[in-house]
Image (cartoon, rainbow, N blue to C red; front, side):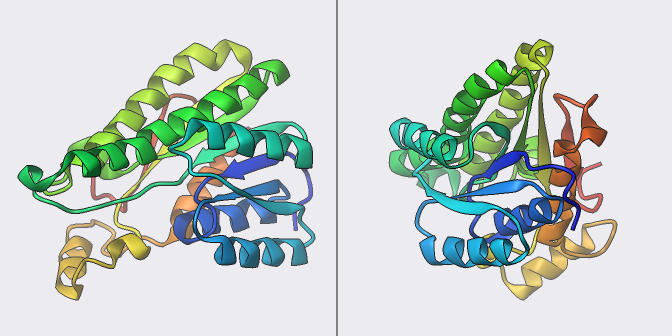
Length: 248
């Protein structure tokens, strides 16, 4: 394992799927990992134990990121447990398919508050700390549907498009303070979010992907690890597509 750094990274939604792979990848790079979760405590505990078995310092931190007060408490707990935060990965998010005319106010509010407001609340707390340190990295996990839009996913696409706008605007604002802000925009990735798709749906999506396969969570984790590393110190405000060529 590469122990070149003990910098602290928070990964929201880190207990399962893409988030868990990001946590593992960063742990193998030698980072101290704060695993953010809300309802998946058992999975978060299991992942924490796996990372500790690798010789990495890791712990779990609960918060409903759509609640700014819970986000503040989570960041305070990380401060007390690990000290200064170096990087934030805004990975937590939800997805849902529905006809536009069937999207209720509650469905809209839940999507925006989790995928967009949650990233805003977490980034606000992270930037406060990064400004003091004159360094830091934020990576937002958006979606190719935030770039091109998806039929029957208007609220999801809107939330991810908003996250892209947040990424670019914040990068411009905090660059002079040594903070980079980028986004990774996954395509079709093998996670629980694909559970509503039929095998025929997935085959069509694979055929529409130039690399002719469905992505793996590790594909996204590799991009995140790069953006957090010193190799990406001159990269900010960018949206890195990890979609097998689906969006070109």
